[in-house]
Length: 320
Ligand code: FES
Image (tube, rainbow, N blue to C red; front, side, top):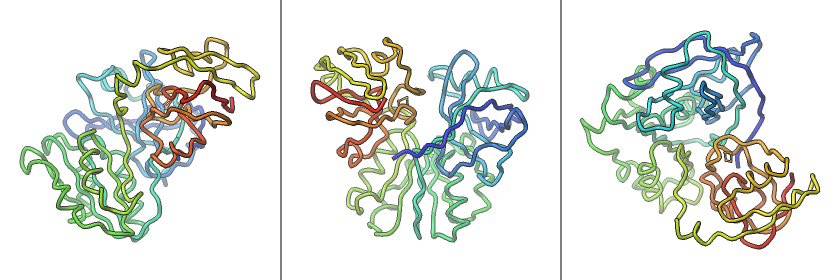
């Protein structure tokens, strides 16, 4: 379940630094000079980038440094413009509106962890390994990337010695997940962040582990079966607190239907991955299509992401 203690902020870019080929880190401060909100490992922040682009980035600095946040941004040539905006338009002195922090990838207390990161998925893992190490937990990190020069923050991770296994694909092949995760270890939590094939491989490799052992964070939404969307039908949503009922036709999201009648829930990614639009369900059964809630949370149906979710029945009642 995501945790949210969010603020609207105006941030000042203090510093940019190349962390590897294609990855720049951005150090941010509160523009008014005051301390930034507290955060825990796994948290992200929404940045409102030049060009009216909103993107989520994991905080990858130290939570102890209340005066500064750091994010790492990979330039994605085939991306939708967020990473290009950071690389091309953000410079020291740039002022950026932001909202957060929000944590959908909470580091649960444990005596032992296996961390697995692929590519830019190292960013949330960085602060997790620091926290696990500071807590005296037993931990290891398997960190894969395309090539060694493309892998960010390797210099920082060198301080942890052989607890960190750097695994460039061009030198060593794919990450040996089957080997690392072969034997289920009750009491050990596995945290994984990276591209979808890595997350799927981690899910397969931990299939025999105790339920809940694997915790993943997705940067891109899980695909929705086109056959499912093709059968979408209209339903109604009652926004209980507003006293408004609205129809949500096929091809429209709950958020868009609400906006059309003047109700503007908070949204950010609009892809079901960030948690900003999470809404309490008071009645009806949601048809979850997010990539965020666990299977158990979706089955419970207490909350839903209204930017992508629909209704299994004719009517939903939401706490809006
Ligand atoms: Fe991001 Fe809905 S706006 S999950």
